[in-house]
View 1 (cartoon, rainbow, N blue to C red):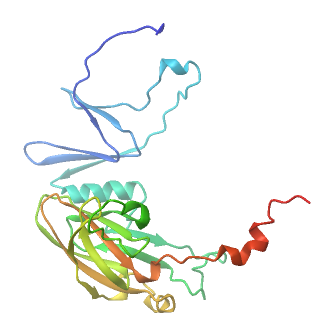
View 2 (spheres, rainbow, N blue to C red):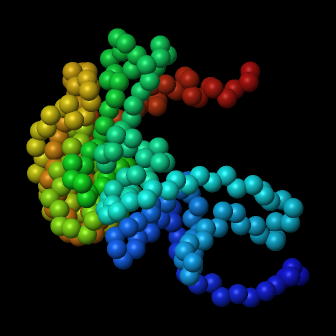
Length: 267
């Protein structure tokens, strides 16, 4: 309360987690992808970005350095989905340009994907084949907790269902094909609470869409599965999936009691 005070009117403020796309009336644009500079302002002359903020209450206990990276891409007519893809590549995801969660292993002797390993060198768990539909989240939740008080909960009986969130980014109606690692026993489109809207048919797909070494997936019971999802313009769709190879495996802790019950003893 004793710090110097002043008052100002804040206008034109907006938040950006990963990129800002500027456009003119004639269709020219500038994509600014960044490493996390969240606070931006629209000004009469253009844009302003806060790189470092300091709180007077912190006194001298402040970091006076700002490490921020920005990349500028002039363009004409990039779609919303392409802007998101490019900014994601800038942050280290989706380096092949597709909307996918991809894990690429190295080839060192210590890596499980090295020559002679039973694991494939690369693996893509989710791939969206529609240019305007992005897979923005892929995770699992504990059904016994998340399903409490929810009518027609899609994860009932699955214990730990997988949740896939799709976004139509271009403002166009879309019939999106999604390839996932399967087999998938059940798939539902739900609302944000996980309540069933409709069941989604699951079809078998080419396992080459998952990895360049599909023969190595058979030993783990993994094969490609395909879903077709209808999305309205700018729709955020939530899918609940029972992925058979990824089902929760409960372990008998009592069988290892001689280990965990004595690990903290000092005598």
